[in-house]
Length: 114
Length: 113
View (cartoon, rainbow over the protein chains, first blue to last red):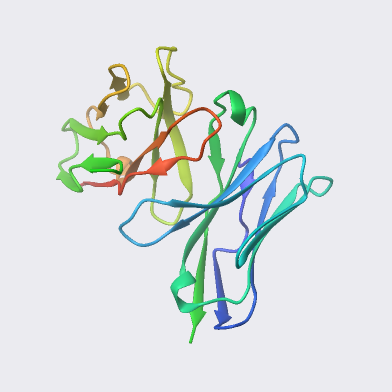
């Protein structure tokens, strides 16, 4: 039962353009969502998060949008840079503030071409 | 060091052997998770330790898998009688408190021949 899904295994974008990574979830009880970035041979690193009480959170070039009615979130990277090339995982949690565990999607490999 | 460390970084073993993977957490971080990532797949939750509470073992795939953690220190993940489908990268993550982000180690790549 895949509660968090990233349906695009890969995405290729030109440098300077917008990258949009998508994530869908099935559990309406999830109350916290995060995006992680992973380079080869390294552990994932936290990128940005959003609480279910918000619909948008922005941090520099990275913006996460949450559409609760559609059970969908997306990560926008603008402008995309070659150094953004990595695997991006979305994650969701129920009761995160009380120690709820993270459920991860399968990841989307982003390639930003110069 | 300041980050989460894991050892070994790579482990090759024969089917049927036992392996032990180690995670050295960030000092003072109360929560510790183990995940695994099989080739081409997402991060699969295995087990979660939070302080002195009973661990959440709901993600362990079989009774061949077990993990221990003493207090807020080192954790070990043990896989007994390894199978080829156990081949994966095993990741450990720390969380300072319940509402904080997780910090991941570099992982241990396990290959079962």
